[in-house]
Length: 286
Image 1 (cartoon, rainbow, N blue to C red):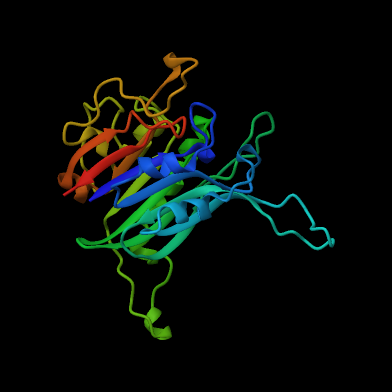
Image 2: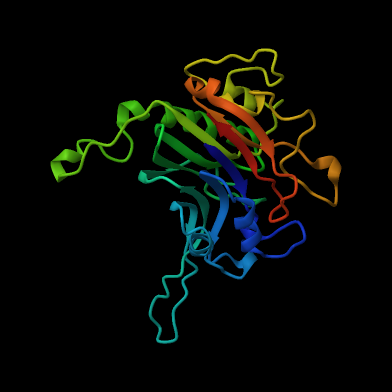
């Protein structure tokens, strides 16, 4: 099973060109996909509906979208009626196998005035794979404030580990004539975390010190797949700014429940991808 996470920067690449086709091409061969910075009616890409565009380019996938930021500029049509054209910025999950339930988990944020602060979210998708059900989370954390990221990570972990208590999107569905949904312990959390391994936020996420010498597989902490099965090479980066390469860094991660750690076969970055200022991060589960 191949999984990939990709912050697609609303479809705009390092060459400043909008090209959704090359983003779709970079995802070829994936079984489960987590995307961030997926937009609808966003001014920076001409208002393209990326959800519809990606669904058309990837027709063999089930898909769900969860907006974090969801606003309306008050537009009306030519007749004066509400246009109902919402500006949305959020996350997406696509899967070759059915996504049988989903929730959009809004993450904590603070009111910031000097820089943009969008509502961030973690999109939860319950996927029934041939090897069993698994929860997939597509996540995008704040890009400015480490303290805010820490708040978001605490909240995210609380919700992820509470799943078997609250049961996700619905329980007791037999009342409505539907079979009860699975409630798996296993999860995969993928996305743009806007943190580096040496940060306090990373330590909060994984429970280690960020340098790998305190790396443990514990039931109450997610495991970073880039440290498993050979991991990523030293100096690997997932965010690339060609104008100042010294600022490039690894900020995109995939974290898994500890019970899945022995199933990770390899992890890699697609360094040829040009569709965004991020690189797709892939990993393979046996």
